[in-house]
Every structure is written in structure tokens, then in C-alpha cells.
Image (cartoon, rainbow, N blue to C red; front, side):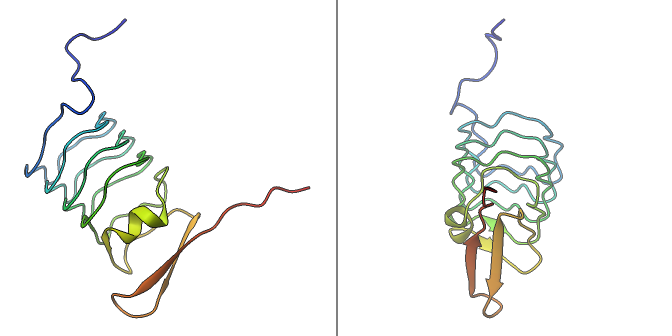
Amino acid sequence: MVDKDAPKPGKLKYSQQDLRKADLKGKDFYMADLRGADLSGANLSESNLIEADLGEANLQGADFTGANLDGAFLRDANLRGPNLSSVTNISCVDIESAYIDKETQFPKSIRIKWRSDRDYVCMEIHKREKK
């Protein structure tokens, strides 16, 4: 059964909104406009953020447990401090366009080698198949 009242992809607009500490667990933000939103401390666990625009959003301290970030736009997003260790579909390309710090935690498939407080190298670790 299709929910006729459900927002269409790309129709959710939260640009510049104050969503600090909001409980958004499990929400569908597919193609949502979250540019510049303040999501600091928000619960985004298990949320669908596929192709969401999080450009310039403040994501400091947000809970991303089990969130899907496939194709999410993170340019200039503040990713200082959140635990991203259990997110799915995040890559070095995504990370390098955002602001991170040494407190930001990443999935085991991502390794950050810090050269200084601001300069780092991001490496993707791929599992080798056993023969």
C-alpha cells in the first residue's frame, strides 16, 4: 500500500532549520534539502540520508548509528566529533569535502592518517576475499 501523503523524493526542505537535538531516528530523508541546517546533537540513527543535501549543515555530535549516507552531499558540512563508525555508504570523497577532526569516528573501512590538526590523508580499506 502506498502512502499518498508521504512526501515525494526531494520535496523535504529543511534548509537552514534549527533541528538541534531533534529525534529523527529512522526518518526518510531521501534527496532531502538539509543545507545549512543545525543538526548538532540530533538523533539521525537508522535514517535514510541517501542523496540528501547536507552541505554546510552542522552535524557536530549527531548520532548516525546505522544511517545510510549513500550519495549524500557533505560539502562543507561540520562533521567534527560525531561517531560515524556504523554508517553505511560513506567514502573518502564524501569525507574530504566536509570538516572533520580527530574526534570524528569512522567505519572500519575508512582510515584517517593525521599530518597535523587540519591536514590528513583518508584511505579506504577494502576487505580481501579469501581464496
